[in-house]
Length: 393
Image (cartoon, rainbow, N blue to C red; front, side):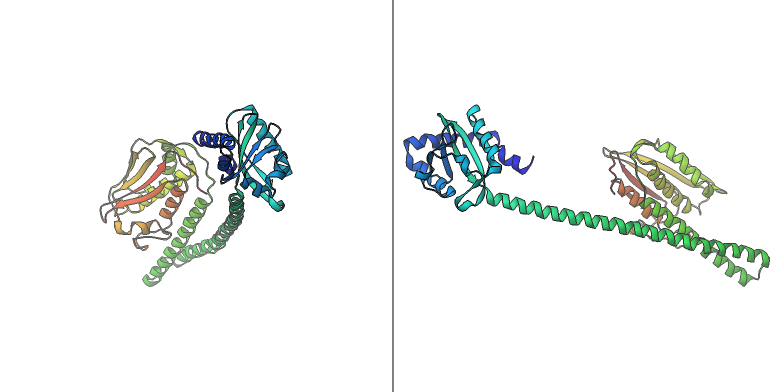
């Protein structure tokens, strides 16, 4: 409902009160002229043709004429031409229906000043009684507010467009940066391989140096891949539809197959639900969580991973529990930050971007991500997926 509608359509109790006051006031004009003359608002008694039969002091002051000059004149001549159709419609409704009628018109007041007036009219005898309330200040305040809102809306749209442009520029810069460095890094890896073959079995010092170089290059390549996945998650074009998490898990297990080679790994899961969501986003989350669990169970003779499902009224809580090295729960928040990590990169590879990708992806759909664990006792990493997700751009 608009502000105008709120003004022009009083509730039933308010309408009956105003109508009663108008009837009482109109009756008072014949019984007690002083009561009518002392009314705090401009009041008129009109005949069936809309001519002024009686007017109080406030009405005279409003129009800038004496009572004698106003009596017998049509009130419509003091109404702004643009407001005359609704004014005439108001008078027509008054005589067609006994209930209080209300509308807002612009009146040309004393000195030709245009005033916004709220008119309340009710049939009385062969005419009607009408009260005019000046709402000019109120309307002006609304116009100023609406103008200010329009300005703020324009500024917001401008800033949103600028932020979107800067975001697209950042994605282009990062993508170009990765592509520019990926080529030289791959060539360095090839040269290193040729050097190893040429040297055969190198002296111990040389072999150790080559190993350090190889690991450094592998970390760079892993960083490229992590940043690439992070940028893909940022630019994900989400589409909400029913997604079977059983099908998602089957695809994820294919993606992490290389991490299972030469290891004894047991992966089990609770019955997985069908959720409303985006299959690509859910694949990213489960892939990162399972890859993380496989990485930190590498020192275990038998790695055990289990996917848990807990249902609440509003969301599904999906967790990946492992029997790995665990983590200090006091540093949980750091794990989900960009490049955040608790374990040494010399022991466990990775860029520290995976969990940040998960949190960002979950929050984009109105969900959240967190972890539980203790050092040496394994960990469980969770994400809450809303039953009615909303894509937040």
